[in-house]
Image 1 (tube, rainbow, N blue to C red):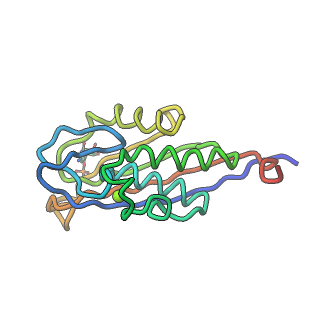
Image 2 (image 1 turned 90 degrees about the vertical axis):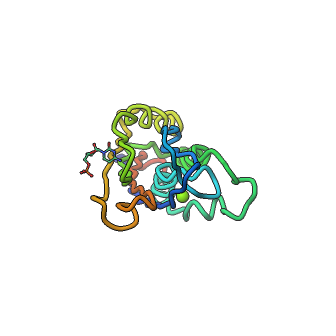
Length: 168
Ligand code: C5P
Ligand code: MG
């Protein structure tokens, strides 16, 4: 028996923006006079990637694993959710081939933080930063994101394992 099993997962998340909240993306604090609202640290990028990993594994979604009604996750570092999803993948014999993600946020400009965000995510996932891509887009001033009311993130995760692992 030889070959590989490849699985892909899709994640999406959105958070409302509010003055005085921290803006945390992929575990990196972005200097800004507003931030994302949410039960945890509201890291929209970490949440989308977590759901992409869970999706690839067909293990439900982030709210199933970390309910936002649970006081344990109040103000939580969302990299914890990401590490949990990565551990579930590793436990099933999967390696993360790559992650690709979009953050849609009208301002501030994020491109100077790309390296830090990729390195932060890669460290949480225990993979090389070369396997983590993060792209940034505005919404061209259209809709809630464009009006600066919210932030969105989208992610795709690809997992790979030896076909023999499935039989193990
Ligand atoms: O949305 P738009 O196509 O105008 O974005 C142009 C470029 O600006 C993006 O490719 C990205 O490099 C950068 N950008 C950014 N931070 C944002 C939005 C976009 O650095 N919040
Ligand atoms: Mg979220």
